Amino acid sequence: MTSNANNDFTHIDSAGRAKMVDVSSKIATFRRAVAYGVIKTGKNAYSKLVENSLAKGDAFAVSRIAGIMAAKKTSELIPLTHPLGLNSVHVHFAPIADDRIAVFSDVRTDDRTGVEMEAMTSVSVAMLNLYDMVKAVEKGAEIITTKLLFKDGGKSGRYTAEGVEIGKIEKLAISPGKGTPKEPIDKCQLITEFGLKDDAHAGKWHRQVSLLAIESVEKMRSKGLDVTFGSFAENICTSGLTLYELPIGSLMLVGEGTIMQITQIGKECHTKCAVYHRAGDCVMPREGIFTRVLTGGEVSTGDQIIVIRT
Image (cartoon, rainbow, N blue to C red; front, side, top):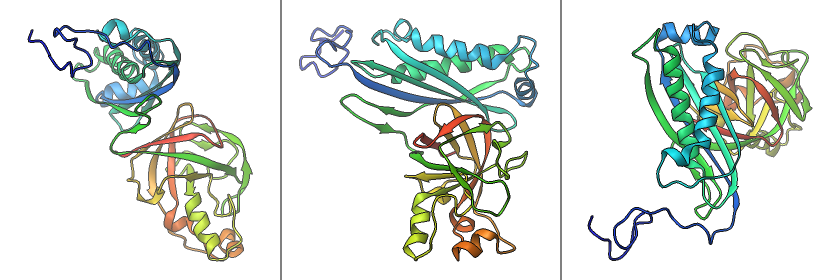
């Protein structure tokens, strides 16, 4: 191999030999990476996955373990990566169409180098395991996407992939009746294909959860309206996201693994509801959005939201 006199390559020494980067002088700091993948399973295999009726058993449970193990074994699979002490590996699945499954891996550590490769390896092996579980039903299943969504920590700081946006939950709220202001809460349970527990709008339809940006609420306040969180009947108030500009179908990874999909932007109000009469205007029909819950879980005020435009 030709030597590299200037030694410009981090993984090659001055004699042109492969090497592992020396990180001994670095200080261990918090690092995090989130990776994403999509596997096209075919409609028959998809149905069996969702119904948990595959002959091999619970494909999601086994593939989750495969993804976790893969993250821990990354340094044995990718030659020049470092063995790391991982704090946590969370692998999540979401049915996103009638023949596709999305996979997320969220990996965290306190170490001298990042966990991007661990997250990517985790997602890749989880999808390979899904293929193994469905191949008896659909040998044409296809892994169509694998990408790093987000990383944080280290010298290079935060990275966010193209088409990915980061926001935060500012407040949560539920209400006992439709068309009425909601009552603020600090945390809640999102139920798969239903919505927020104990909320009047929850149900098996496409508008299970309503979201409105705090920026939209502040816009109404600037007009002199006496409004606050929940005044426009939103379940989740966000910051950092222009919600009404997000495409329908976009995915939201919230907190520790709750996954929602955007189903509607704004809405048509045929009559003036209690919210309109109380506030004097309602921004929800113009700038609010609605989602369905693909994967449930607990969410809290302050949770991060990672949006993937699809």
